[in-house]
Amino acid sequence: MKIVIADDEPLARDLLRALLEELPDIEVVGEGEDGTDAIALVREHRPDLVFLDIDMPHCNGIQAAIELAGDGVEVIFVTAHEEHAIDAFEIGAIDYVLKPVRRPRLAKAMERARLRHGARAEPPPSEPAPGPSRPTDEAFWVPVLRGTARVAIADILRVEAAGDHVYLHTAQRAYLYRITMGDLEKRLHRSGLVRIHRSAFIRTERVIGTARRGKVLALSLADGAEVVVGPNYRTAVLEAIAASA
Image (cartoon, rainbow, N blue to C red; front, side, top):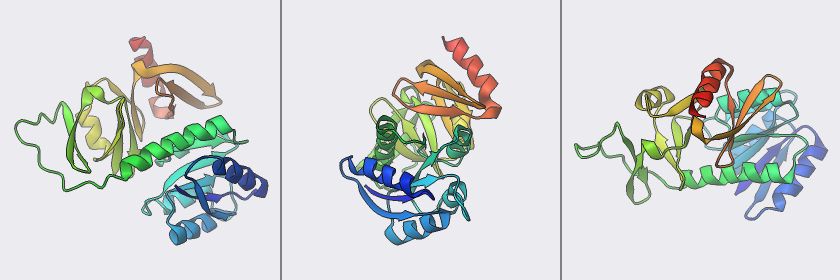
């Protein structure tokens, strides 16, 4: 996996690079001091993943991520401020990692990155129109490398947005599927999946813990993922969690 790092603190860059280089199949192909550097490095090296500090001069990490939205690179934010978590997930980042970066937390973020990278690596063929034997209200027919796979809605544990696609996470793997979040919400009506912010749905029975960090509400899921609840969804999500207990 090719990676670019952007952070205005040299020591933070050095630590992150050292921790990443302990992991297998990682190549750090570029480092920059701000979002402008990050954009240039991504377009020069075409990495799979970019780590962006949020508070950087000239062009911050959020601005850089928005600028790179069409470049096909995945983003993990690195920040000292938990209140940025909602911003990170709203624009489709894989994860946010708090400073100082710790090995276990970085390993978890990289697991999510590899999962998303693996799903993206399967180029979708042209998607066939569903026939009468394909009940689209109960399942998605997802293009995969050698045809299509039926992903039952009942098997979907959570969903996360990725640009104009979504990742449908099941117990076995994640599937990349082209659909808007608005259309997806209609398909998932009464499915048991609950929208927790503009970019994600979860099954509330998969929640194993909650944590309040200032204004941020984070949920720990049974598969090890941590997701952030958007402010406009907080009341409804907490009620749904209580109802599923």
